[in-house]
View 1 (cartoon, rainbow, N blue to C red):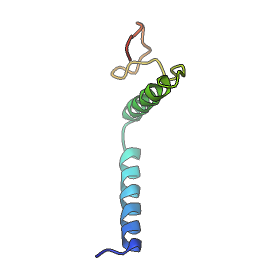
View 2: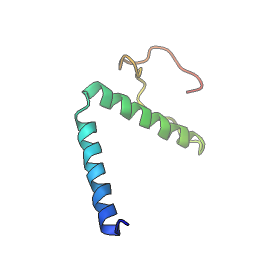
View 3: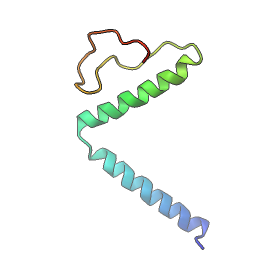
Length: 72
């Protein structure tokens, strides 16, 4: 059976590996991840009446959105 120390070492090793994987991603993919996180935070904020704060750029092209999207 694993001890708490072994479990912690394993968790930290996996965390370090994940960070390296994310750091190796292309810049555009990092921006797409950030947009998804912003939109998830906006969804939570809307339940409390907060105004959306996510960047208004298209996730595919990473260009400013020229049309108003409803329901997102």
